[in-house]
Image: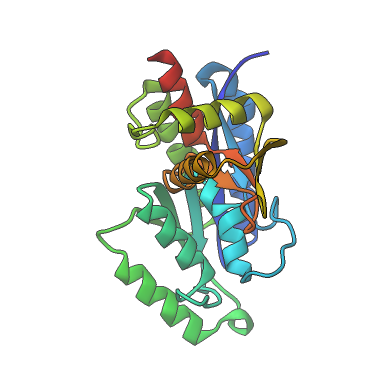
Length: 262
């Protein structure tokens, strides 16, 4: 038995990518098998085809953002012939996920496939949109091209190992930013660490906080402020758009570890 820090890796791609998604999963799974015990790091894989659940009342992309994107520490994005389906805000769901992830100061590894494609699977409009996007991120985002599945596997293996080395040495961009955390925020993080989650339901006559009914208006205001602040800092993430059950993010676990050590 050993303890390890968990880093969530979200695999992002349009619908024309399938083989490379499986390769990315297997690269991460294999790295964990061979290295987790020695680096005390586990890469947990996130993806719409792995751990997204059915949701209602919100736009599908918004649901995926709540379920997966907000928990992701790293994105692996893979493109081939398509940019993807537009969302209400962006040219595609993949572009929205990458953009919002980078805006949070997080890292995204972006790959473009140059593999040959069958003419019956080629959409010139989608391909042009993809090329426009690729051009738009030149100089502002990390990306690499590959020409075969073996080359992609080799590239990703190298990048994951480099990231793991950074994490082990403690100088990675994954390391948590020093936050000003209030006492009530610290107590909420400690509660999540102890119970595994935060149950936070707003009621007509107060709030239910992990089974405790609180109806003092001042206390409620401070708790709401703390929950909102922790979510904005990326230290906790909601399991759904209802914002009633929260998990602690990898950044949150690192933050609480720092607080305890200090």
